[in-house]
Length: 119
Image 1 (cartoon, rainbow, N blue to C red):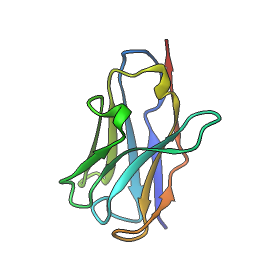
Image 2: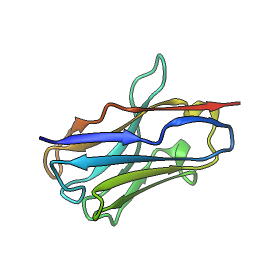
Image 3: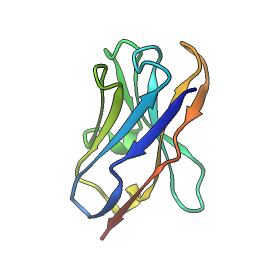
């Protein structure tokens, strides 16, 4: 059974940093691309960042480019999101996700971790 479990969220002041982690079981992080999405109160879930199955390519939503970095550790089977220079508008529940197969739609989702950035 595939499980994605996020951790690392919390309350931080604007300008601060957090590192989110997604522990994966039942599948290898290198088997497909993996991504982070977020959902703010009253808003739809939106894409934040993704890393390719090979780990060689990363993709970012425009508003987080230069501030967030997605990475993975194949030995620990985890995917991380380093978030620097956080802004109040980054406040949201952050979700880790992965498709069922290479090139497929995002299918597996974690339970989410809350990130709150105070001004």
